[in-house]
Structure formats: C-alpha cells, structure tokens
Image (cartoon, rainbow, N blue to C red; front, side, top):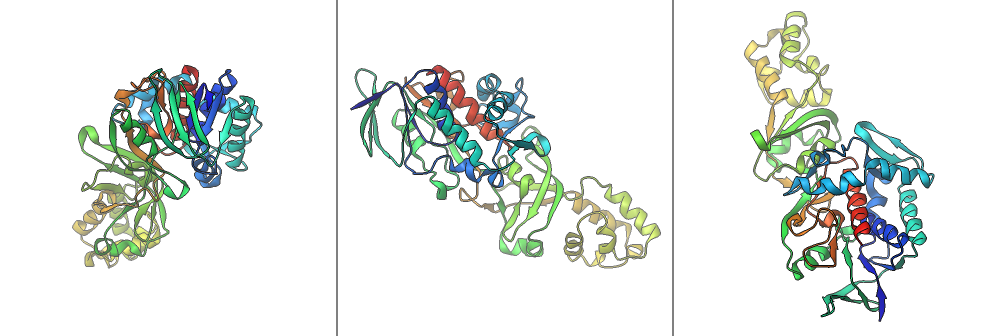
Length: 400
C-alpha cells in the first residue's frame, strides 16, 4: 500500500495547481482522475484560448465579483493569491496572452499552453498522476489517515483534497463525486443549479423573436427587486430557443425561476427624444427610423407586434411612439428555464462554506479539503472562476 503526504482528486485547474505547489514545497503528492484527459474545462474555455483570469478583480473587495451563501468567504484566498500573481507565473512560462474588454485575459495561441504549464509545475514538484483512475471508496482509519480504494489499488494519506468541479458540462466528465464525499463526511451542501447558462423561452411566447436567432447587440439586462436587483451592460445573443451571450450568462446566475428579466435594447439611446425628433422631421416608416437605433432585424420584428407601429413615423400618435420607446427600453420577459448543466459554464451552490476554513479550505472533517468549483463560490463570467481555482488551490497547498 503506497503512502502519500497529500492525495488530490481531480486533474483540473484547481487540482493540478494545488498539486504542483504542494509538490514543489516538498510533499509527496498523488493526483487521481477518473478521466484520461486533464483540465478539459481549461481546454474548451474562452473559445479554446482560456480566459484564465481578470485584471479587474479587486484584492481589497474580491467578493463583489462572486456569488455564494457567504460572499465574503472567498475574500481571504483571493486577496492572498491575486491575478497579478498568476500573470507572473504565466509570464515565467513564456506564455503570450492578451487582454480583451473588462480585464479579461486570454492565451494568444491556445488554452493548451496553460495546461502544459500546469503539468510542468506538477513535474517540477515530482507529482505522481494516475489517469484514468477512479476512486471507489474513501474511509478514515482510527489513526486519522485516509485510505482510498482506487482502480490501481489502495493508497493512504493524512490529507485528501477534493478538486472534482461541479455538474456543468457532463460530456467532459463532470460528476457529483465531490458532493457525495462531502455528504459522506457529514458536511452540508448548498443546493446546486446551473450558472452562466443560456435562458430558454416557450415556443408560443417566443415565436415573434425566433427569427432573430444569431442577432447580437449591446443591452442593459437586470433581474430581481430592490436589494436582490442585479444588472449588467453586456452583449445579448438571440438563439432559436431563447437568449444567450455574455449579458444573459451573467444574469443567469442571479435569475430565479418564475421571475422576469428586464432588457433595455437600446441602452445608449434616448428613445423618446429620438422618436419625437423623427416624427417632426422624417417621412420614413417607424421600422426604418428604428433601424438607426437598434439592428434592423430587431426593428422589423418589433414593429410587427403593434399595428400602430407599422406606418410612417410622422403619422404615428405620440402615445404609440411612447409605448414603443417604453417597450424597447423595458422589455420584461420571463424565461421558462435554462439550457441546464449541458450548456452551463459553472455550477452554483456546492459544499457549504460554513463547513470550510476560508484560510486553508480544510473542512470541519480534519484532513479533508475542498477547492475550486465544488465549493459554494461562483464567479462572474470573464476569468473570475479560474482565479478562484488558482487562489483556493494556492491557499490549500500552503496549508498542506
């Protein structure tokens, strides 16, 4: 039976990073994963270029870009291992990267550059990696040491790190393994649901907009009321089944079933003033005037909803134009659901942070640690979830 100082379950972003740091600090580390592939989520993220962190994360108030039952939980790890720290590592490995909008950093060439970097960090720490190698059972002996029955025999360690991710994108191997282990050892779970996911609408209610599939435009999107209200200025994408794009992915993490989302389809325009001006100076159809303010396909679809809007703007009543402006700037629509874990980029909820140390990520079950997406910490779109993976892994590795 082989003995290790730490066994990390999950060869993803958080697991590999944690193993590499712990190995380089002198620990004998084993990484296990049921898949033969490593870091698939990195590979497919950011269009294959991995949006690996975000410069706009504020180390003094990192929680403002994250959700969870306790939003402050992530503050400790994120303030101790910052985007600048990870960028320095990327630069040390000579990986070229660029910044897109809103602080998002991507690899110039390929996400694989990042995966190879993590594997080199593991090699530098003498980390052993068994893949594919499933874990059949975990138990703790009377001496406090954990025994793991794996596809390659039983192994022992005083520390076990669960870095198995959430339920999102099952086709790349996502499972509920981490949640099962948490439950086995008496830890609480926060109910899980898909996050950063497209929203869907039923056939009949969506019929007027189904023809807009493929259309993208900048919008202001919001959901919730008063204290729970959240809003983003981002790009919206119409799909055959509903709405997607950064605006919808962001708001989906805050949206609750049965509640509406509100969209301003022309956030940069003063619609009432623009339409009043057009009425006084133009003989064009309302749709043609509208096409100067929103994409023409949207303008055409929109005016079909009311006979008062299907005429020259000079002949329209002030009431009809006011109604049009109001509807475009405050489109209330209630999604019927989401595209589910199949299309979700992350999983909301997970291991309850009340049962974890924010300093070390060790659970109230001594020697059992949880890092990355399996924890009830979820970031905004734009590299924040990877930064949580790096920061939680770093905090855990230091504690190990």
